[in-house]
Image 1 (spheres, rainbow, N blue to C red):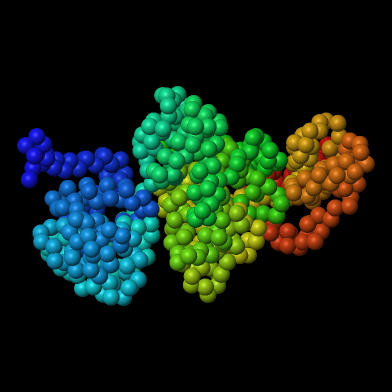
Image 2 (image 1 turned 120 degrees about the horizontal axis):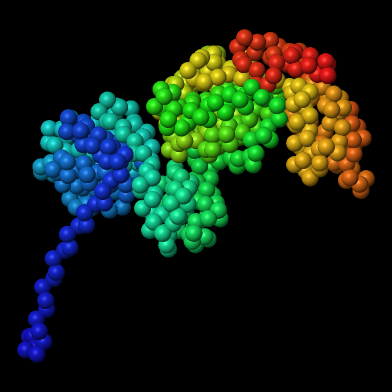
Length: 518
């Protein structure tokens, strides 16, 4: 019996209406429109490739509104909500979808795991023809698209791009305790390109705690998050840039070419009719600055530098095919364009493509097509030592803007390289007879010239005094250059390059003639 002094319990409040989804950024909205169109024309299932479930579900919400259909979400933990919460396994979920009345848009989370069961796969294949007639659409949301055999003809694969600048800007503004300077804000957003929303949010939150004004220390936090993300699974790593592009000794022709191409990145170049620069292939003798030149390219273009580890990407494991691993790595590079992508010793990555290796040939074909067709501003710098292993597809015009041959440095370049390494180690180059030392180091590579300086410093440090010309000469005389061991191979490389590549430095014969005249 209820006491008359106790007021009756208030009726339960009606559930609050769901909050309207946040508007999608332009690229994600374009994906939603594409998915909706595919569903409208009778595509029974869409595979939406993204590691960001929240953004994927936001796309599904937009698709459902466009199709005027309710949304159901399935996961093995929560079943098919709201239709069948107890349908935790994939087979029961498909039965519940088949039994549902009216149009329906279903988001399936981690459904690729359920499809490993042959019964679930068979049930889905049986159900697909009925879905379009019943105005039911399935959207599988997952980080990869491992389509099982038999689904390729009925399932469309759509990739959701990584967050755009407008989405990153909203996260940054929410994390910053105070409005940021326009230039600082732009640099922070640029540093976060390529991160997922959750990663960017974490990076920005840590960054503003380190430096509320997002100065250099704050940007370093964001870049560290990006390095960790790329290193975890893409086979791509960020490379620190040089302080000065002039750290590369010699290679005057290549540097002049870079200066011209750097101008072509400006928006005015598009109006003039110039396409964006595509890339360069550097072939030549080991230790002559090809890798250093890749860093110089990014310095000239004022863009980040990424290194693509081809052997690691193509040797993918964990259920990921080499083709998919390569595609993910290239997509990651495109996501932070404009960027410079360095592919070191490219001939090793595609070894076997020139023989009867179908897998290597397929990978080379995918990479060559990407080189030719890519739209994003990704400037590729590829280096190669062994030209005999270079597939001819990579040498075709259109893959790269230019092919350069990097030879052993001539006498002026040797002087420059020696001076650079001495200055880098706190010594004044004018205090040494570099002309005589450069003569003594004929046919030495840039790496060997560095070892001359380092070896002389070791010798002087052991004697507890500063380095002298005598130390440099002694180490230079003791060092056996690669040229003496591989003279025939180097001469053969020069012969191959004649008529196929532009020299990266001055023509060797002319340079030596001028040196003799002096």
